[in-house]
Image 1 (spheres, rainbow, N blue to C red):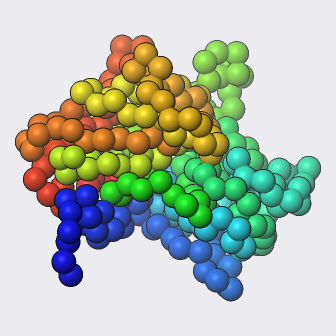
Image 2 (image 1 turned 180 degrees about the vertical axis):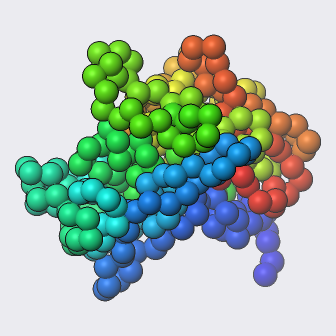
Length: 311
């Protein structure tokens, strides 16, 4: 195949790399049979040292599988509850029939342990959304039950590739297990239940979390804050991303206010990121709240074809 321009080369190379840029378990909607979501107990290596952490996960992964549909497509999802307690699934930001909204004792009865509930609705609006339980959200979301829900526009913006980052945190004890203090009154009266280990796509945040890019490529970065209480304030060193959507709603493209992106719990933002570093350079993405911490690092290469840790 003849490539007529550098932009065309980057675009075609981006297609080959797109599967690397999704969290594990990325899924395409089935045309007839429902997609199976199974919330259950699993394990995740959140800290590099010591034992893995027991988490609750959709289909064994944190984040859960990426659900991706075309605008107007019919969504059919069968939830099989393998948790030790009741649950539901709420489709955060999506316009759905009331009976499909996943609010326990309001729009549906909770799905009991071992039970099943079938959700069915149309993906009416394009954008970046997410799914999570509304049953005991303070515990079930904190334990790891969340995932991205992408509805593709009929005329998407032209970029070289797309990258998805799900930001969150976990409150771990010295033995790497989650602190069992979900729903304590002190969290309600204070700043919420903050974790002590931040993650990007379920992996430890920090300098070891690298996004390998090609110099000059254009990325659509879809961001979700799935933490239950933490507010992220993101700064991109040596880069000037432009916001193109908040919470699934398109906005006039604009630079980050004061160079920072504020993401509260449940918020999403879509950015256009032009990667202008020279090969061999790397730049931190920082959380500027409190004392500040590095979340990830954007590393520029000649081809950007290595496996991506946080993409």
